[in-house]
Image 1: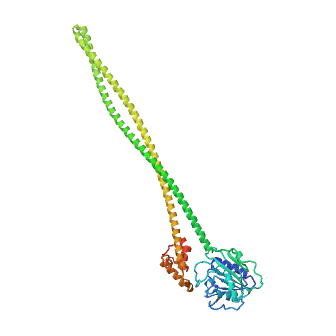
Image 2 (image 1 turned 90 degrees about the horizontal axis):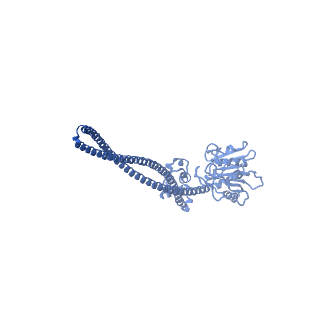
Image 3 (image 1 turned 180 degrees about the horizontal axis):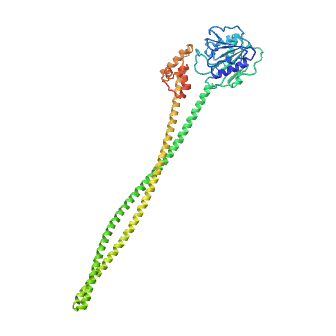
Length: 489
């Protein structure tokens, strides 16, 4: 027994069995995940009947025979989660009215939706006006069963929405309880005794509302995906523009670096010429050194000749001609000395200019090396920025791919639902005359032939669905899609 059936049944006993030593009858009383017996008043007499023996069953009955009780035997009759399994519940409804005392109540709780659950078979679901139909049916059979209240209860933790109805036997003036089940549970399509219109009318079931909410959520998600894609496209466009700018800057820096390299090559060529000039200056220095030696030798020779001339002047007048010739040689030596000194001055000036050019070349070389270092730093920074942007672009691309895959999956699932619904909706009218199990097999065969769904393979792949006795197609639509289970075709 699911959560809402247990809680509503508890309140039904509390409200409609509120009399001393009440006799309560429950059909389908086998304790399956809970029993309503524990909520009965302590002074009441509780009788539970079912088709099989088990916990909570006081009497085993034959479903094809009337209830083995006298007329007007019970104050409250309970049929909770029973009528959906009863192949002729309308006859059981009349039989329960037979065993009720005048003024007694009949409480019915049956599913208004949900999966197939066979105990041993599953035949019916009850819509909001089912209580009115039962009331008219009983009246047509001369049984006075008055609908006190009915509604469809909201689900809590399980997947079921319960159709709940309270009938009273007889139309006397017995005062009704002040409380109502529909005031305890905020249900939909609430009918009360004598009402012409239901309260809180709802055209759509809660399953349909949840499906509509899911569709709206999908639409919002698709809109968000489109918005995210647009934003991603804009970010990608901006990144591409920035990358293009960085690539242009990088090419400009590479051209500047290449120019600097060419300038460096020129500077290195100039340095080679300076080294060559240094070699020439070194050779000139050696030549000047040799000239200085010759000058010293010439000066020494002139001094010796002058001494000899002085001696000759004092000693021999006849040697004046020789002295004059010697003086002429001295004059020639002096002229040669001046010429050598002039050449030496020119070499020194050329050496000074060469040293100045070398100093300038070294300064230009240092500036070029500093500029090259700065360009290399800017190049590394640009490369790091480009790498970071490429990583951001890769992350955005992955996010976009994931969004596209999710959207594609939802579109495929929606298309599959439409195709499956189209196949299931085309049922021949005469299928309704055949057993439900036969019709279900034919539906499975149609889906398999259309290569939309293989029910037998799905149950083999997911034994938990087979263990619960669920319709594999219904399970996949309600649960399998959201759980990511495989669509077996």
